[in-house]
Length: 214
Image (cartoon, rainbow, N blue to C red):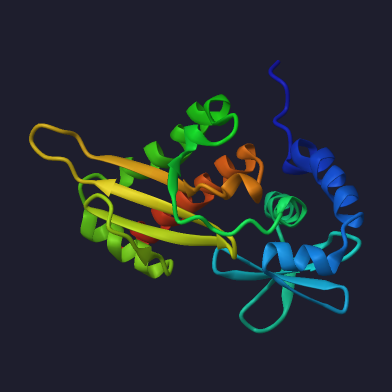
C-alpha cells in the first residue's frame, strides 16, 4: 500500500513552529522598519499579494483581513511565508535590478521544481496570448514593465517585487515566459520560499486568465 498523503499541517507544521520561535525573539519596532510594514499594539499589518494580513506578536498568529472588515485564519503556507518575511527582512532597499531564479542563492537546487510549478505551468495557459496576459496582470494590479512582448511587476510584499515576462515568439521561436526577482529578494525570503512565491503568483495569473477569458 502506498502511504497516505501528508496534510499541510504535517508537511509544514515543524517549519511553522520553528518560525514562530524565531519570530518571538524579534524586536517588533525594528522588524517593522526593516520589512516596511506597520506595527501597533502588538500587531503587524502586512500587505501580501494585494491583501492585508495581521500578525500578532509574540505568538506569530496570522489572520487575513476580509472585505467586510473581519478576519479569518491564513493558510499554513501563507502563515509560514509571512513569518519568514518578517524574520529575514534586513531593510535592504529594492534594487530595481531583475535576476533569474537560478541566480538566487542555491537557486539551481530548486530551479526544476520552481520552473515546472511557475513559468512552465503559466505558459501552458498563456501561450501567445499577450493581450490575455495583460488583462490578467492588470486585474492583479501589476505594474507594466518594458521587457519582452508583455511584462509586469507585482508587489508580493512591500520590499519584494516579482516580475513576469512573456515573449510571444513567432514562426521560428516558441513562446517563452520568465519569472524574475529583484536582486535584493534574498534579503527578504529564503530561496525555497521565493520558489513558492513564484508558484503562488503564476497560479493567481492562471486563475485571472481563466476569468478574463469568459
